[in-house]
Image 1 (tube, rainbow, N blue to C red):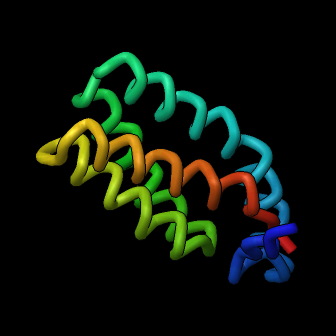
Image 2: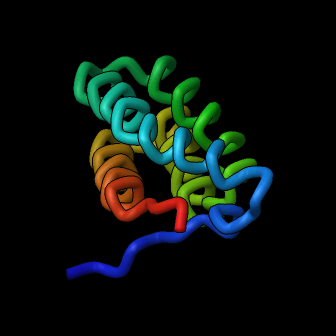
Length: 100
């Protein structure tokens, strides 16, 4: 079993609940990215990944933000294979995300 990816903000008494909500919605956001990439909609993939870059960092998931940036960059200028690899890596991180 793979280690959970825990938010750096999950234990914050003021932010923990927001991080819980973020984690709960992360699967749907990742699904949107996967569907856009699979459909060949690079612009939508880029936009969704860009949004995830910012939100992941704000919720204490730096690693997710870094890989989302690679998805964004691959959507703009990478090959289909590079994009698919980055999306798969991002999905693997997102399923590991935990607030605490």
